[in-house]
Length: 69
Picture 1 (cartoon, rainbow, N blue to C red):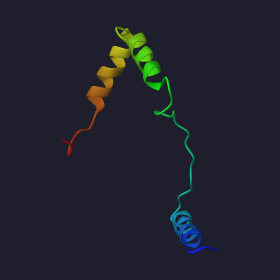
Picture 2: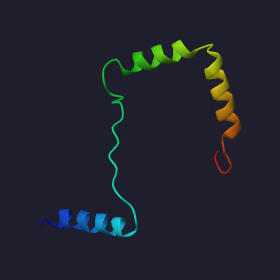
Picture 3: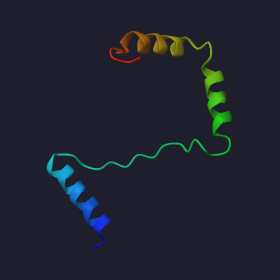
Picture 4: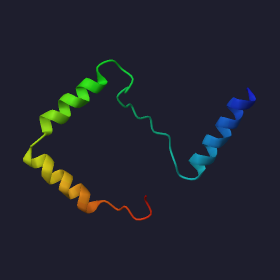
């Protein structure tokens, strides 16, 4: 086993012993062509939506910004 592989395996084993497990998350590729345009389309589709305004107001009220600049 290569030293890097051994080091990673040791680190992962320590995390598992600590009660953690690995999780793989797939997210949109922000570098992909058309990503920006799709974000804009979706944002414009929500502009003026009552439910969106309620959700944003709730997020604003629930936000804990203590310690953030």
